[in-house]
Image (cartoon, rainbow, N blue to C red; front, side):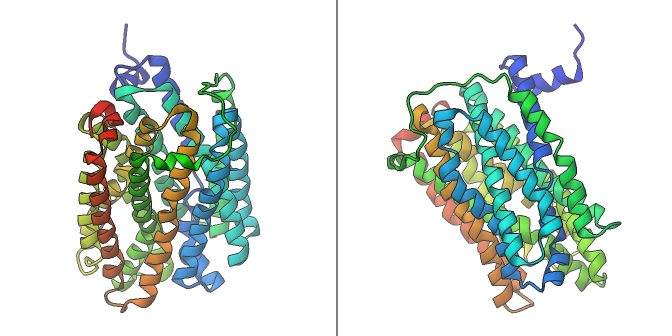
Length: 424
């Protein structure tokens, strides 16, 4: 029998899994990618929005973080419901909310108040798509392949972020930012029928009786606490870079003589393309952690991202191509450990409380994601102009050191034998 391209991809991704399961995983990842295409359109348009609405850097970071705030608050209510009702219906209705909020932003947002409300609604939609999707995959894959499977799904989310930034930036070269945002959001609507068709025959995995309410007692489990801490510090670094890396590139281009409008388009497009290269990180990180261990792999990745953080903010005087190359490495490092925490949570949690555990991971973990863009923006506002990017990115290097210390403590816990079939 001849090998089709899809069969080759299936064997390369998860050779030990049933072909039907791997095909389903690829389709789930594609669905997520399409649904999340507008996810970074705000970041791409940020230089224009700041001028139009007269926002400082802290306010601009606050609007971005409203997305994460909606995610964090709703996670405590939405994700535990998957313990009682299953994830399928929650995912589909959340997709409707996410798409509606993104379509409304370029049409209705006129100032910071309206923008915060719409961004928060989009964040509610995101948690209801992403976390139930992770649960569906964890139910279908187990053992050594789980990290790789979750890694591919998470990679689709990262690819969507990067593609959103690059595509919106490219469209702004020929149209106003609102039209560019609307065009990308309209394409994302195609993800809704994909979700319905893919999940309509899903059979719920009953894991015991659950009220569907949040169970805080899952935090008694020490590995859960350390995995949430690692995820929160990962999110702090990740979202700070997602928001401010394009602006950093814009600042370099303007300092070298480019006009502001052209630099804004180029910064968004190049920043998105640089982060695209890092979007394969979660898949690679999940794959490595299946074989090397969860905490050990995450520590090594944090060491790389911390090194990049200490360097990148001080490179403004170097050739632009060299700066972009470092951005590519940094983009990979800030993404590569993402699937490790989500996979670890599914391994150390009891099945009947998995929804509550994932909810607390999403909520407490994304607190770092909320704070990251705001704190970074505050450093930019307060630091001397010549050193502000150096201080901003170096602060993320400190975050990496704290994360490594927590992950090493996780490796010492006896309960960590549950991770990756005993690989810590």
